[in-house]
Image (cartoon, rainbow, N blue to C red):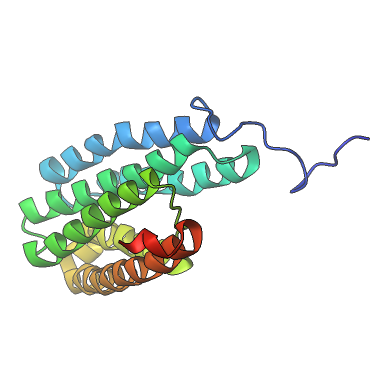
Length: 199
């Protein structure tokens, strides 16, 4: 009996697959991020800079859709957050370099992102899997728009406070989701590995 199209269809790729449409889009996003970073440093707030950043950011939703359609992979689970961090932290560092962002909020975001990534990697080696929450996705969305507002010419020139306010909202979400992740990770570890997982 044929499986109807839709959510019940079997995935096209298994968890161990490397070359998938979603992973190719993610790799392209990583490769394109340095172009955006150089554009910020060289050109600052221009519509061309904003357009390139917007297209790169939108590929995050494209590879997510492709992963849901064809099946998630372990490589994708590693590459997707890596691509987000290269784009976000690179873009924010470039904006600090240009004097558009203050270094303190960017350092807070960078420390949290790198620390949680290291913790997630360590947990993964122990067989512990903690899924991302909806609030964490909103955190990334806010980080992206903080960068977007900073390179959008009308706002960068006449209302830079919009980008600054969005950046501090991103800081609050980044800190909150990091704390929530660590709190939930201990509970998940206990459930998956037993009470000795916290030791």
